[in-house]
Length: 473
Image 1 (cartoon, rainbow, N blue to C red):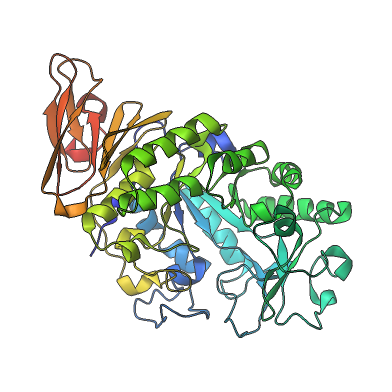
Image 2 (image 1 turned 135 degrees about the vertical axis):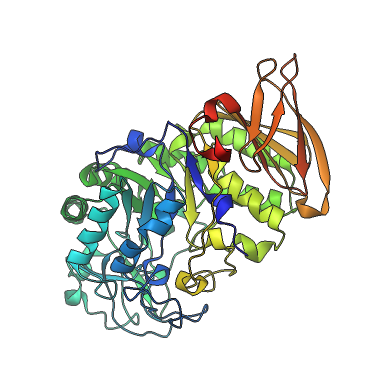
C-alpha cells in the first residue's frame, strides 16, 4: 500500500531553498532529509525488476547514478536533502557475513566504492542535487576499519592508517562500559572492525585532513557521523570543524541527558530517545502521557532540539510496518517524524512505501522493486520550540508555532475521538493539512477536533496556507 502522502516533508516559508552549500547548522535547521541506502535505492540501468532478496547481504546494484536519475522522485516528496551511504572503498571479500554493500566496512579512505560508481559519478550526483537546491549529507566512518577474519590482518593494505600502531589493541566491545565502547573492537571474529586509536595525535591529524578533503572534493553539505558514541567525545569538535559542514552523529542512547550531551561536541545527533519511546507509545506498549513527558524532557535538556534528527526508521532499526500493519498507526509514525518538533525530519527510504522488515538486513529492501509509485498530498512543517501534552492517555498533542498536531496510539480500531484544540485567536479558520478538512475556532479560541479511525490531525491557520499549494490553497 502506498503512503507517500504521509511522510512528505512539507515546507512553508521557513525552509526556503538557499543557493549556498557546504551548509552550516543554521542552514540545515529547516531542511528535510531522505536517507538513501545507496546499494538498495536505484540502479544505473533504471531496472524495476532486478532481483534483490530482502534478506540479502550482498550487493544488489544500486548506484550514485541511480540516485541522480531518481532525484525527481525524492524532490517530488518535497525533501530538501538526501543522506547517502558511506562512499569510501570497502573490503572486497564476500565474507561469512556477506559483502560490504552497506558501506560500514572501510578499507581505503582515499578511494570511492566502485560498486556504487566512479568519483565522477559521485560528483555528478552532488552537482545534480545542488542544481535543484538540495543538500547532500555523506555518511562518514572513522571509528574503525574492517577485515575478513581477526587473525593475520593485513595492516599495510589499509589506507591511510596502514600500521597496527594506529589502532587500539584487540578487545571486544562491552557496551555497558563507555571506555570499552570507545577503545574496543566492534564486529566479531568473522568481520572484526579494528578500532582506530583516536587518542593518537598523528591519527587525529590524518582523520581531520580526510574530513576536510572529502567534503571539499565532492561538495558535500553535511556529515552523518557513524558510531559517534564509540569515539571519545572531545575528538569530535576538531573533526567537525575540519569538515566545515553541519554534523549529525549516531549516539544510540535511551535517556535525554546522555544523548543531549553530544550537542556540546557536534551539531546534533539522531534522536534515539524520541524514536524509542515514540515506538513504544504509538504501538500500544506505552501511552501518550509517557511520550509527552519524554519529549518535553528533550526540549528542556538538549541545547537545541531543532538540530536533532527526528526519525522512526533507519537501516539499523525495524521498519514501523513490521511493528504494526495498522495504517493509522503508520500514518501517526510518519506524522510524528515530520511534525514532532524534535529536530530535522529524517525519513528512511521506503517508509513512504510502507516497506516492512524487522531488522537488518530485512529492512534494507531494494526500492526499485516497488516501481516508485507516487502520490500528491503533502504535510506542513514549521520550525519552533514545541510543547507536548497528553489530553488523553491515548492521545498526545504537539504545539509547534502556528501548528498543532494530535496523534493517537489506538490505531484504526477507534472510529472517532473528539478533542478540543485551544489557544487559537477567536474565530480563526483552521485546516487539517493531512485531511484538508476545515474548522473554525469559537469566540474563546477553541476548535473542535475529530480524529477519525486513529488518524493524525495537524491543524494550521488557513490564512497562512494561501499560496502554499497545500489543500488546493
